[in-house]
Amino acid sequence: MNYLAKTKGFGLLTGSPGRGKTTAVRYWAQTLNPSQYKVVYTCFSTFSPNDFYRNLATELGAQAHYRKPDNFRVIQEELTRLSVEKRKTPVIIIDEANYISSAILNDFKLLFNFEMDSRDRAVVLLSGLPLLNATLRLSIHEPFRQRIIMNYEIPAFTKEEGRSYILEKLQGAGAARTIFEDAALEAILNASDGTPRVINNLCNSCLLIGDSKKSDMITAETVMQAINNNEI
Image (tube, rainbow, N blue to C red; front, side, top):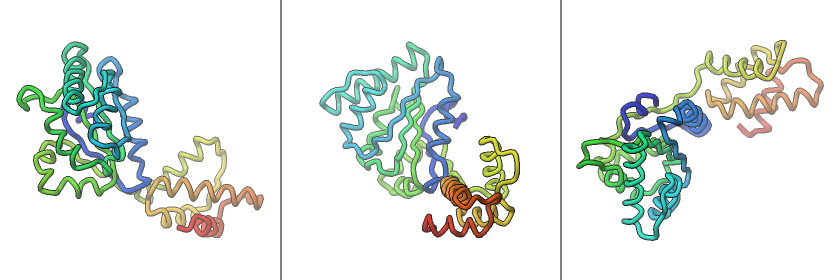
C-alpha cells in the first residue's frame, strides 16, 4: 500500500471475512504523514450514488450539493486544491467496497479524471471481500479495472504465522508462562483455517472456559468445547 501512496491511483485490497482488512488499512493510514496526506475513510458503500458523493464531498471538507454534477465538481475542485495548493495527496479509503454499486464504479473513472486522464491526484483504495474482484472482471468494468495499479488479497495465516500470532497476543497481554498446550494451539489453527478473527474468538472462548474450570492450562479438550460453543 505504500507503493500506492507514492504512485497514486486506484488500489484494491481484498480478503475473506476476518482476515484483517480493516485493521491493515487502519494501521497503514496511521503511518501516513498528515502533512503530506489527507485521509478520508468511508464505509457507506451501500449508499445511492448521489448520497455517496455527498458524503465524500463532506468528508473532504467541501460543501455537498443536491445534484450529482455539482457534487462531482466540488469533489474534483477539493481534490485539486489539496493536491496543488496544499501539496497534500488525498487518500480515499472505501471499506466494504464489495457492496458498492455498479453505477458508482462506472463513475470513478470520470470522477478521478484530471488533465484529460493524464494525471492521478488522489489515492483511492477499495477494500472488500474477494467478490469485489469478480465484480470488476465483468466487461462493463474493464475500463476501470485497467486503471487499478495495486491488487492484493490478504491470505490466511500459515500454521507458523498463526502460532506466532497467538503467542505474541499472549505476551502482549502479560502472560508470563505457557497458557496453551501445543495440541491446543494445533486444534485452534486447524479449526480457524488461518483466519485471525476466528483465532481470536476461539482463544477468548478457551480462556473463559479455562477460567470457569480453574484450569492451569488450555488443553485440546478445552478447544473442542470452544469450537462447539462457537459452532465452528
